[in-house]
Length: 511
Image (cartoon, rainbow, N blue to C red; front, side, top):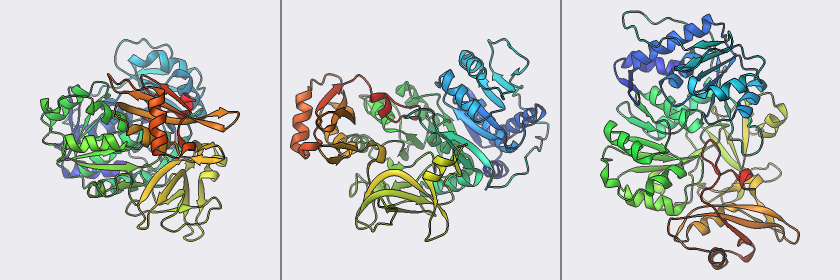
């Protein structure tokens, strides 16, 4: 149940198998193992101890992967940040978590130097790359990563158990400073095994990921690859979809995880036959609902690839998945849960509801977080002891309905429900109706203050290139499809929807 032990077992089984590909770097499991141990020894020599929080402010790449493995060995707590994080937010989180070190890169110096000034307990900054001059004694260069195959890697693993913190993963921050989700080795080792099981991952798989490792969905690509012995091909971003497809074709990738925004960009490419995608056997989608028109387009253009639609939260990584064979029968569902966990719906009084009801989803299992960092009040709101089992369970804050067989259908975030004309409206339902209009590429619906209605429904729409829809077209379509109180009163046309670091639409920024 220790994450680095899962990696160690793979190193023992197949030391010479290719573990990581990123740009020009190609590292075997043995080489990656050696580099991570060398970095761990260096960090220990610099005084980094078990339980200390260490920030990772790095691009997707070998340094980030090596750093994660090294910190896990030390029993330190990883806190990975998206390289696009601004200095104010980075500094505030480093200060709040009392981070002792930051592992980063020279190209981000203007950001991390400003952030470090706001984190008084930060005593070490380890910098990768060239083009910087140390401004203080606590700024040190990244140690030489040369792999010496003639030396035994040092044994520096800390004495920790499965309940030790492995990561503090910060939520996407749709409102204010993100919460620090505390995930233990047991939490992440448990969900790693579960995901690998239901996806039927194999050691001969090649997983191509353009998801940031600072994002739990991206992190699980690393964890599942190294636990099963697969090869992880890392892309720094999905900014250039054609480049990612070139890599997918060249490396013969078999697994491709993405968020709906990435799939929309992929479907924007007119001719996929330019690339050899014959090796691809499965795709996964998470982070946000996959619009039905986009789902159908994916299946039409890539008919031989199995598509898994998944649902989860940072607080437990994954909660459910829809088997590909259920897509035709239940295209709106996110599945019925995961092996080894329990989930159920509750009413506003916390009482369990039978199948066929609507309510807040609750989840229970070894993958549920330990709580929020330094925030007992929010932890107590989220976590509770289930009287039926005596075990800790978690309120997701998401509203679902279930059918008679227990299949789950997302309604809305509890906080996103719009109250208009005395009625409650799910933004997701309105969004799905608008996405059915030819020419609409993306849509997000939110409530805005209205003196007469309480809240009025506002739709934010991104059109396909060349589409000429207007506000009246959107409203007329909704009136024909939905109850009158669910039709938007206002429609705003945007070039793009604002998103969080994890790719979710930011309703906070829309408001």
